[in-house]
Length: 364
Ligand code: ADP
Ligand code: MG
Image (tube, rainbow, N blue to C red; front, side, top):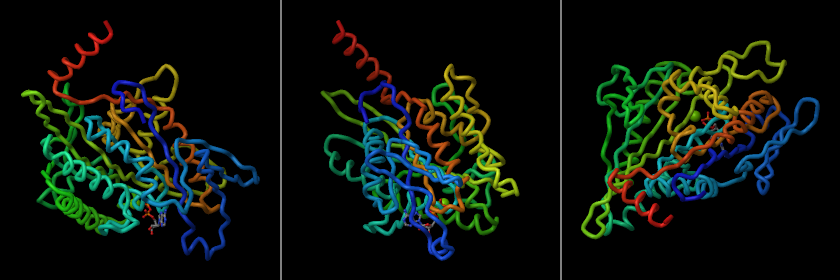
């Protein structure tokens, strides 16, 4: 990934195949997905027996480690955030294919199975410790859940609470009014904050049946860096959005399943709008992009055709019983790959101006 600010960069897309579950093995389902990792390709066998190939930036087979996935896909995004470039990592896929496993995994400290989120925490705080002499850092966290277009603050003290709303600011873009933002100063503190939010999420999910697979969660880490250079102060700020999306399967499986792949039929509303935004962004001539149609796309606006570095990890199950869901995930991911972002370093306007003068001078 280029660290050059202001250059165009496509959204990076990875697919990850999970192993057969015990139930799937017992049912003797056939494996219909094969990964060719060196060529970043996935092959899916259709019911007629032919293979269809899809190629991405990365493709991970079922035996791939959490560490390998973090190092190749996510570490460059977190490095960017530490340099002032916003980053977003999201997991997309059918329920039960490994979105949460990929994002969180086994969060026990030092477990090999820990996922992207705890590894990103470590990465950030290791960097801060190593640079504590020359830089001052301030880190805050917000953690929300979106369900049926309602925003719930997972870090709010009161529960149940009023749903929050999204406002728009000409400079900041879309933001959530009144969201709880917690300051953290160490790895242990950020883990504690996340656990607290997770407990809220789980409690609500058990109260409302099936909810967890239909809600999206966004954990956002805001990092501000203050550097003293030759008597002057330089400020950079960036945020990292870690997104665990709702399951992408159609909510009600109807008898129409055998008819094969149908796009966007009654899946989660926000995912449908996300799909529409991706469609618009990947259509030549860029027709109107309907960011405003859902809370999720408002909040991810910067990450989709905006100024962030974005990674989408699409998760897949191997079994033939999920052919149409897997096909739909592979196609969704293929379209996402065509979106271009323009990553940009967020700095103090003063610094930005200085940099611009410098570039201008070099050009002359
Ligand atoms: P999702 O969040 O997409 O609904 P989960 O992450 O909860 O799915 O995964 C469903 C089950 O499969 C969990 O028990 C999880 O531990 C297991 N699993 C998912 N991906 C993998 C993987 N790559 N390796 C081993 N187990 C996995
Ligand atoms: Mg999940």
